[in-house]
Every structure is written in C-alpha cells, then in structure tokens.
Image (tube, rainbow, N blue to C red; front, side, top):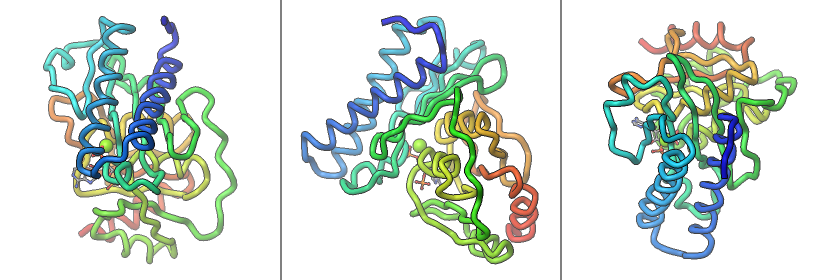
Amino acid sequence: MTCDSDVELARLLATHAGVILLRLRTRRPVPASRLKAEGDRRSHDFLAAALAKLRPGDAVLSEEGTDDEARLTARRVWIVDPLDGTREYSEIDRDDWAIHVALWEDGELAAGAVALPGLGPTLSSENPPALRPAPARPRILVSRSRPPAYAEAVAEKLDAELVPMGSAGAKAMAVLRGQAEAYLHDGGQYEWDSAAPVVVARAAGLHTSRVDGSPLSYNRPNPYQPDLLICRPELSEPLLAAIAASRG
Ligand SMILES: Nc1ncnc2c1ncn2[C@@H]1O[C@H](COP(=O)(O)O)[C@@H](OP(=O)(O)O)[C@H]1O
Ligand SMILES: [Mg+2]
C-alpha cells in the first residue's frame, strides 16, 4: 500500500488500528488487565510498523513506544496514542475510547485523525463535520476518573452541566459532534493524549488551548502537557475567565 496524503494516511491507520482493537475485544474475552495491555501493544505495534514502512523518514512519538531523541531534530513527527481511554476499552459495554494519529511538521500540528471504533466514525482534520447549533445550557465534558478539582465551580459560574466521559479523543470528538460544548482537563496528560484531537478540533473551528489560555505546543523534549481546554469558540472567553477565577 502507498498513500501520498498525510491526512488520509492518519485516517486509514487510526481506522485500521480500531478494527484490530474491536476484534481483540469481541473475539477473545480476556481479563480486563490483559485486554488493556494487549490492546495498547497490538495497536502500537501496528501503527509503528505501518509508519516505519510508509513514512520511513519520519520520527514517531507514541505513548507505548520508547522515546527516541531523534524526534527533537526531526522535521516531521507522528504523535500517536494507540489506545486512548484504555480503561474504558476494557469495559466491554463502553464506547468512549479512541485511537489518535497526528502529524507534527515544522513546529506545528499539520494533520491528524481520531478513530472512535465503538461509535463508528473516524474524524480527521480534512473535512470535519460542521458545528451544530448549541443548546442554551452548555455541557462540559470531564474525565470520569480524574475531573479537575475546580470543574464544579466553573460549571456553576456558567450554569453549565458537567458530563463525565472517558478518553481525551472521545471527549474532544463529542464536542465536534455536538454532544457537548466543551472539554476541560487539568492535573496531568501527555502530548499524545491531545495532539490528534486538537488538530481535528482546530480544523472544525473549535478553540484549543491550555487552561490559562496559552497555546498548546507539541514535540517538546518533555511531552507532559497537564491541562487542556477544547470548546466552541463563543465559549472560550467565558470559560477561560471562569477557570481563572476558580482555579485558585
Ligand atoms: N492525571 C493524569 N495524569 C496522566 N495522564 C492522565 C491524567 N488524567 C488523564 N490522563 C490521560 O488522559 C487520557 C484521557 O483520560 P480520561 O479518560 O481520564 O479523561 C488517558 O489516556 P490513556 O487512556 O491513553 O492512558 C489518561 O491516561
Ligand atoms: Mg491517552
């Protein structure tokens, strides 16, 4: 197989990794801990091998790979999370998990795709769906297991509803698909958790930043990027103000 388009490659790889993960989950009932480990490993192995074959000159930063410092001087780096929402993936009836494939090129995120195999669609930075009209009361997505300590205070200030959901990719795409108006995270995360969701969200016209409003940046020596805000553009100002007032 060859694929000249980077965004198409991201879409194809994320989608195929999703097929591998769905098969593993449905065909081989195994204990949750093994399912998580095998899912992470199999998806990573597929993505790493495919990128090595189809984009041999590019570097890769993967949650499940060994970090190679060569990426710091590379012009093109694929930032991938082979299975985001690993915990939710291991809970058989849940669909809030995702595969992230993004390309960072010359200092900025250039293309990417987020597959949502439990739900069906793979969304990419090429032709993302148009945003739907928002309801009067905003819905803010937060982690199921690690919501920001100040999320309740932010929701109260905006008369918003907090909605717990797993996976950074699933939450970001839920905003894009009109199931919520914002995704707020704080307290820990890495570049692979947000790179693909952010490049797809940006292509759809959503606001993306750190929770203090500063820009997100990628392919840094330390990929730790602990907080994130993705929201409809009209909500960025009130949300950033509410976060600043509530964060302490
Ligand atoms: N405090 C924290 N420290 C490190 N990673 C965190 C984190 N909170 C969330 N994450 C990561 O962000 C992703 C989405 O988390 P959540 O579902 O809780 O919103 C998960 O990625 P993985 O599933 O790829 O590990 C999770 O590990
Ligand atoms: Mg992740």
